[in-house]
Length: 313
Image (tube, rainbow, N blue to C red; front, side):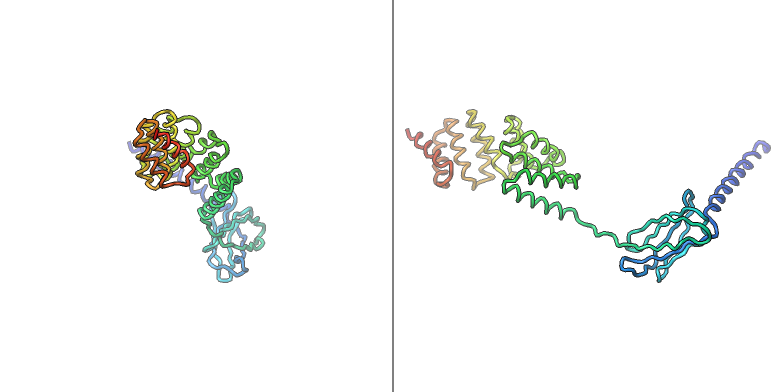
């Protein structure tokens, strides 16, 4: 049994010896009698102390190192001839990497200027400024120019998916609206923000524009009315219901809308029209009279007065 155990440690010893010889051979290839030295200064030409200098021969694993003194000077001894990768890293400075060919006992001095890192810029500052610029351009009627700003911004900051929503709005603002392109970009934004009420309202409005009245209504019906800031998609939906003869349904929807937008005077006009469609003439008269009293100069007032005259007959 003892004889069987003898070859195992002997073999292990051979492997360890071979590995050690290989390692010492690699180290030996990096070592020699040459010296590498240089100086480190900053952008103002002032010496930089405490810069760590690391040198590694091409194809080798050993790293030799040095450190700059108060004069910015450094040296590394014991280098073999060959190509060396030299990395210099100083406190609060951008590191530098140089390649040096060592020939003979001393390589030419490696003098390096280390620069301060560029200040980090908060991208939100640029993004917000560009969004505001595009909004002003869009308000002036230059929709295509505004969209170009959004598109350029998206190329630079592809992770800012909210820009897709702004692009969608530019397509929706065209005359006539480019509904397919608007929906294409809007859906990218909605996938990231499925609970965003403003995006849902725009989605409903675009579906209505495309003729998908059922899809539009489904989105509006699912919304929390207390989170709604824009009543017009609901008004458009109510107008559609009125035109289809669904006056009672339209009146119910407008009544809910009034709770959220009590100062939106035209809601009385549209609900009055809804009551007419539902043949609830007394309720229609009350709403239309109130609308005329609240908004005598509104564009819908003349029509409201005509309907009131017809209701008297």
